Length: 421
Image 1 (cartoon, rainbow, N blue to C red):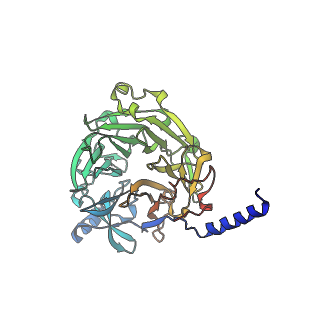
Image 2 (spheres, rainbow, N blue to C red):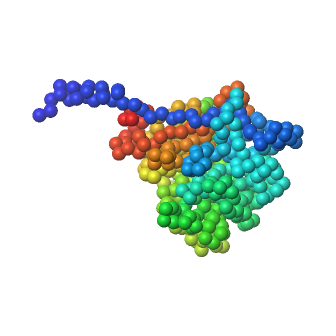
């Protein structure tokens, strides 16, 4: 028979074991006070300064994507959309060279792809976010917008990361967007014939239109696109004022973040605390949308609510959904998708002020990692950003401890629980 004394002894021994356990940490991979642009030559730099194409204070990194390939090695890509002029290039890799403000960026695939500044629509005008697939391909969404001017039609660019050459370009037709009113920002790619058996020829790309509140679906087999719209893609005015680290700003962004478990597309507006879903099979059937972009309303559903708004999101192979809530700043793991099942993942909130880009990445050991880029957007909106402080960070966190079988019960805070290393 169990006695009270034996139980107390067992608890004491358990606590001693827990004290010896090591907790996982988030790691800052790169950080900048201000973005540092590298150029092919000093003459290129001087020309960019002279014509106003280089204003170092103007660049804001939005997305991050790590990649590893046997011949190219490990690379980390970031995007710098042209919210304004003075940004010499909009898609870059992070080099090993460092200056006082941070690591030097290198334009991808090269500088000539960027220096037209909207005057040549065969170049990259403004890259928002990217998606890298198991096929060693990078999908780039180029909005075509500089500031508030639609210089070029939005386009989808597919780069072969084995050769760093353009494999395919698709320019979106006029019925897929409204110039200036639309802003295509987030691509999510599902490959239906992945390696090693597949040839990477059949895929769909889902693209969020953040300001005209819709979803564009691209089909590689037909090389065509169509558009879906739904009330859940709109911002919620009750969540249009955001507070991060005690600074508030208004941003009424709609359809923003995308994730998938290869059955459903999960999404949320930025101005919302709700997550929504729709079956991929419904989106992939073009006949559902021909002639009516607002069809199939009953196929969209709300799957849950979070404790706060969040920006980017990502899903791992176990259907865990990750995002960083605004107020308070918390990295959460979510599955099932409801407030009572939010689990806070240990992470320093000072590293995660407005995470605008997030990816789940399988490293060389086959383990999944969460990669995030934060840019302190609340300070940009308030005009309080200082180049004397660290403002932009690329942060990485292993996920193997979170994906373990013995997970906390709902509402339990992982930061109060030590994890075996």
